[in-house]
Length: 154
Image (cartoon, rainbow, N blue to C red; front, side, top):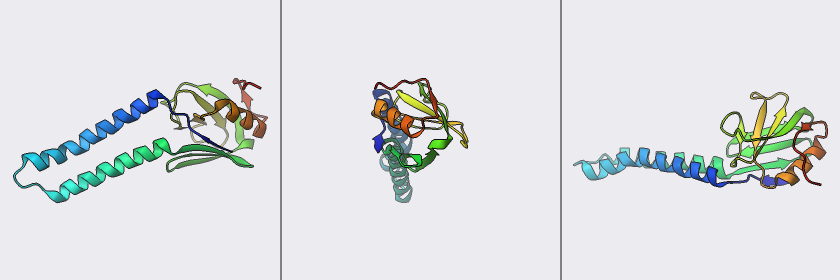
């Protein structure tokens, strides 16, 4: 079963601010070069435009292509080019998390779950499935040994 990531207003605002900052930082020199110099360097302008498209494209890709898929033996977490396969047998604990700025996270909402598992570089992953109750029920069916402080409604 496949779950998309929940997207809240805070995340959308952070993404908008980031995109505006990138646009100003990269496109301001392009505008200056075009309108305030006598002989603009068109190669530099095209390179800056390409840099802008690559940066914004990457940011949009990792932000809007987030999903979580349940397979027979593992949970597959994908956010842009970042992917993780978390085996159910390695999961130790699932809890709610509001600390979305620190740690390994593939999410787009403050309403998040933290999955602790063995063989993890950071110790856990923080995710934000859209239908959290259904996600938790399915996760606890696949990994009944994982402890949790989150009780999904029955």
